[in-house]
Length: 133
Image 1: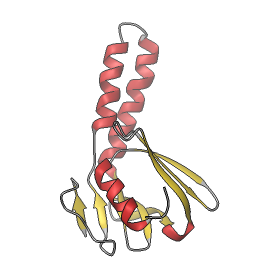
Image 2 (image 1 turned 180 degrees about the vertical axis):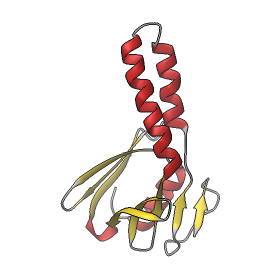
Image 3 (image 1 turned 45 degrees about the vertical axis):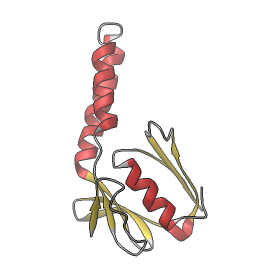
Image 4 (image 1 turned 135 degrees about the vertical axis):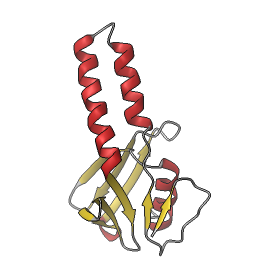
């Protein structure tokens, strides 16, 4: 299995790739909560709680791109399995500051915060779902 932390290691579409974590979103929310504390303490607390939750998720959740599906895993346990053949569309919102990953399957829609390497995510998506954008 390949773990990617940057786009310089271009994996093949047949390799299993586990994306490296990215703490940018949770740390950004912590900073926002600190700034808002002096203006809106309650709202700042809510943002801080969200940031702590996302920090925990970043530390424990991994995305694995296999030859046939995207797996969402915690440790070695696969929590969800999303076969590419069921995908209808995908998109990374705000590419310059990627914070949200959207994909639609035949039966459902999924929105995930970007808690992993956004460049590696885009490379894997383009390799495994090239006709969908």
